Length: 568
Length: 71
Ligand SMILES: Nc1nc2c(ncn2[C@@H]2O[C@H](COP(=O)(O)OP(=O)(O)OP(=O)(O)O)[C@@H](O)[C@H]2O)c(=O)[nH]1
Ligand SMILES: [Mg+2]
Image (tube, rainbow over all chains, first blue to last red; front, side, top):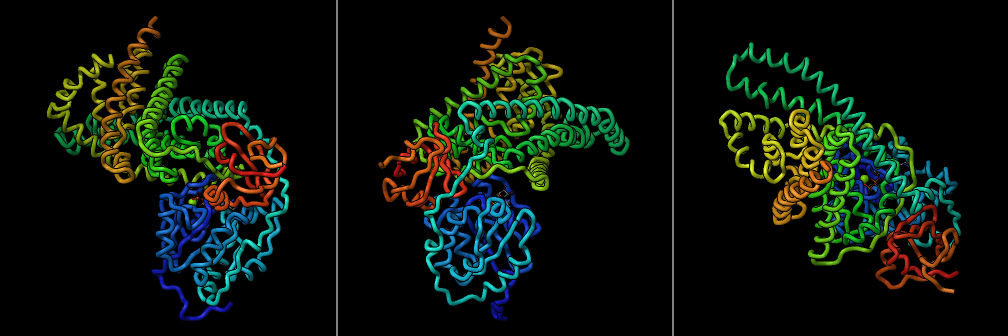
């Protein structure tokens, strides 16, 4: 097929990548552009579009869809971009061609003269002995077909070439793809031994428990216990004295010096929080997350937990936003788009807001609890969080109108050895985003806190909060600062507790109460903004107020139980 | 004999005969499950996992009950 001049691409052409979930659209996007869209081994990784400028136009990566007739939030997003598309790259997975060509068929009926078909993951297909007659496929579908292995960057040139050719294909008599596929063959599918093990009702759960324990150990002992400790002491010993002396010498002892290098200073407290504590923990956490995501283990957890989620009016799908919420509440909330019903989205958003501590918070909580060296403190922490989760879920699912979902269907991707390159890019990207989002807020808030402190407002707020902190929660007065920081961001509060723990939190009961209160505390500003956008202001406000009340009441009850148990 | 997927013993192959109704058929077909295909049950607990043509699909029991197979 030759290409003609009037079909040349303009720079502002919209080229949209479309296909079934988990076929490798984002991987193709990354191959064709210099941007990075997140790639993970489960369906529903992409929930917002990614856009990149390439030499032949604007490339758009969309969330995966199964058909053009779906009406979920995800489907709507993708269909909107399809409607505006000048050209379509339909990505299919060679291994699941019979499923993926259903969408192709629908697309061909509408976009036949402006699309190409990219058959991705041909490496996997070859490994399984799947033989595909590409020429025949191309001839029958009347569409340019390109083979690709996106993760190895194979097929890039051919895709660009095909886009040039494909844009000139006009007369199309799309044959029905269904005749292309012989569905009556028996394919012997042998399930891997690992899968039999991971999905086994007993061993599966033992594995989940073991994986969780390993994560706690790595985050608590290795990252919090060693790396962070060393970073913090280096910053305390060398960095802070040097910048402080420098600022005093240059600026003298005045208000600005206080703002820059004082107790809550931008170059002292903020720098220590961001680079000494939060960054190492966030990076550690995201490396582990990316191993879980890329291996394909998450869908297996979804299978195991689906029944538990049924009890809360949800199903196995819920595990994906919840796990992402353990990274960042804002991301978890956006990922609720993959849930089928509005009711599920509200319940999961609320659960993430209430009972899912984000990475930064969690790492600090883990190190706090690890420091107590007391198994009963761990046990009580986990039990409390589980009880709060189950109760909130149960209450929400019985009060929110509409149907929950026992309607669970999910493709289980093959297990893969996570690629180091993807893990590195993903973690780097997430750490960068965290820095971009939280650093300005941390800097501003340290300035605000210095000012509040300077004018005695901090003391005044402390005295107002004192009844809650001292009488209700039995915590030292200084914990009030943590509350104030927590309203801005929960991770700030967590760092506050971490700092305090060495000086003020003495008993196991106090540490546990502090850990629970900050775990359940109000969603941070970034998360609230996302909740506002995705679920509306009523939900955002209700959730904010409820988490405030829940965290304090659970803390108050727990502290009394603990004092009884741990001191007995 | 006609039974639902949920009655299959793990490891046994069976051919899909029909889906309970048009709505369910829509769901399954968009996931690439068709009448005439061979399925195998891999795992059966709170959730059912089946395999079809090199893929594994997990579904709730409610859905699995709506796929009829011939034994
Ligand atoms: N073996 C192999 N794996 C691939 C290839 N392309 C992508 N993958 C893997 O397939 C999985 C899914 O890739 P993504 O690019 O996230 O897929 P997607 O279509 O964007 O998925 P959603 O955004 O969830 O719809 C990841 O684990 C990738 O590493 C390929 O060519 N060969
Ligand atoms: Mg994607």
